[in-house]
Image 1 (cartoon, one colour):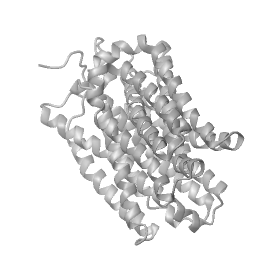
Image 2 (cartoon, helix red, strand yellow):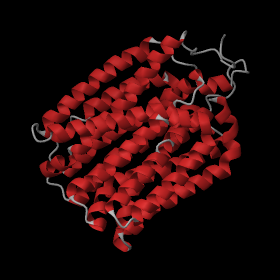
Image 3 (cartoon, rainbow, N blue to C red):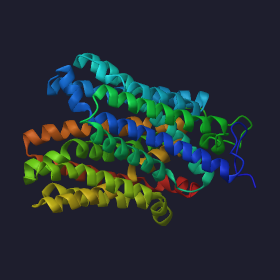
Image 4 (tube, one colour):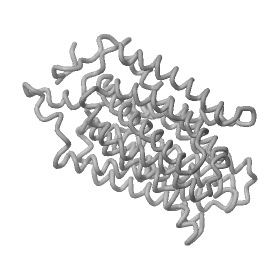
Length: 411
């Protein structure tokens, strides 16, 4: 029986097998992003030594990743509407894999920043394309599977970082990242072939606008209330991405400097946080089915706030590690659900707008923590993660009426 409210244009794939294949290939692209990014992060100290950059110069060069991602997202939303999510994802994923091989061949912070701008552009483009495709897949499956896609990113990141750590002492950065690029291109080729040879699910926007002969104004930019709701969802994503960015850069320093942890134990801080996020995302579909989107967002924000208060103010290392685990479980599903809801409301442009704000949080978090740590203390600075998680919870509570209709539509 055909799905309701489908318009002409891209049609849902015929048969559950086709959907499963497309879903697996799409998950592979999420994992590709995490795998490449995780492998790159491991090599940052080597690239710093190679370029002779100071810490501040390296910090400015690293902004190229975020700047490239943020600047490109709005344009990519338009490209996805014009050419389709899957072709854009394949092109961006291939460019991302190729560009990770470039940093070892730079000789200054300036050239590194230029290369990372390309890397960030590809990363941001793929983020918009795969999230937009995931929104359509969620609608086609009529199951809240968005967290599962983001679990692929988390697993890919853990694999990329773990593999990078194993080979770091045996391979130069140039050889390691070249092999990483080759693996990435292979993943993009195989998964891309699956995506491009199977019909894409119908666009969520076309499905909503299917009552009109020409699809209504589905291709127009989100207006009025929809635009406002997308902006608020982007703000929710920002609040939680702030925490992810802060913990990635500062969790180890917090454990070592504030609680006198050994280097090995301090390094476990982000590892347990990332593992908890992965577990939370793998169980996210079941959580969404049980609680619904609004309560999942609010419960996640409240849990993250409590966990981060514990992690920031804990008197012992082990309590702080427990706090990181609780925080990871709380934050796990907020970003994917917020981005998915923005896409359900406004298609690729909604994903682009919310993602731009969300990645702004990743950019803001580490910098804000650094300044606040200088002004006050590192534990006090880390409590801002709890504060913004609480703000996200209150924001979702205030927005619950606007979210309720779409939450029911994708279950």
